[in-house]
Image (cartoon, rainbow, N blue to C red; front, side, top):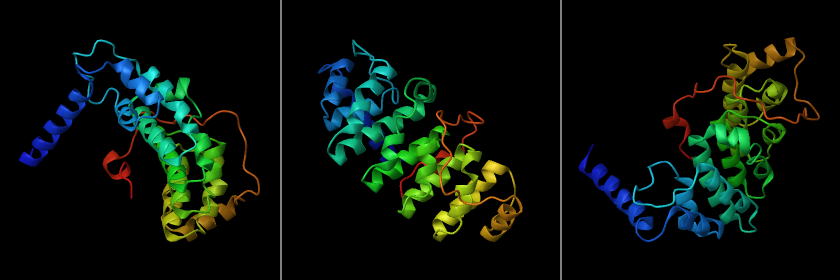
Length: 239
């Protein structure tokens, strides 16, 4: 590790430790997070990574951290919703079974948020969880290309075969969305086509087209292969 990297790591460790150890306990952090205090929302989102300092007397559970942050997704201010979403997105990556079992659908309402940045990050979060839903399929047709691309990527990660018609329709969007649709179609079907026109021909043979109305179901599509994640380094960086 470079001297700069060691310095940054030490600075972060000191900041995290000094932010709570000796001055407050974990429950106080969550109380501040519930009140919408930015530093506490960020710290709650980092629960479990790195470990909470051993000097803390009351260490909340991940479920308590989720419960503290979820109500803030309905905040009137978009910056509060965005902070809560980012904290929950980081938590859900570390505690996937907890999200799937106790907080399913948490990100879905944000896929229709007025702020496209929030919609994009909600789709991103679901993609990392390899979960799909009617709301995520709807987001494949989002008018903002950046949001649509991330929704396409996410339904591909979930291997959601209910989205096949929508993915075929996404081939007619801009290059970025179309290329993401090519990759998603390959992931869902295990076919090896690499060009949009090849996928269009494949879809015509099977009578697939983008549906006028989206299929509806009541349950999120579960991950088909838990733990089979692609490179996080390339996927987990905002553009």
